Image 1 (spheres, rainbow, N blue to C red):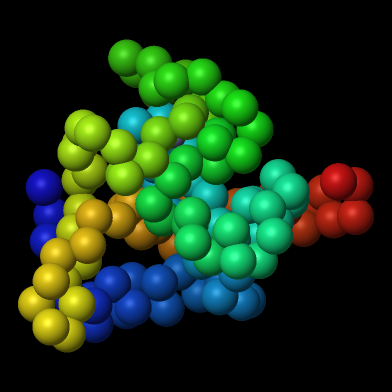
Image 2 (cartoon, rainbow, N blue to C red):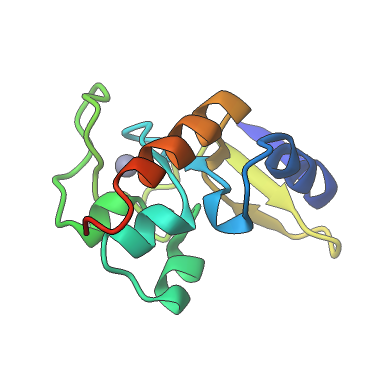
Length: 125
Ligand SMILES: [Zn+2]
């Protein structure tokens, strides 16, 4: 598992170079789906829910997705880091030194691809 400080976490999000914070993308540790606050909004989440779930619960929870499969198959799952099993791959250490499980920060390529994909479906939800 990877442990990073808040500074590094923010730097990785900045490195994604997306147009807005709502496009900052994270990857579910179970199904590897790349997701952002915008993904959650498109799935029907209100802003508060999206902010709370992003990086912590898989987008699949918004769409009644199935449990994680043994191997990622390209579809979202219903994983959440708040569950009994702690299988996260990354923790963010805050300024007080407390560790917070969090989905991995997606790569700039993944984040930009997601923003582009969401842009093409604008207004179709
Ligand atoms: Zn998932």
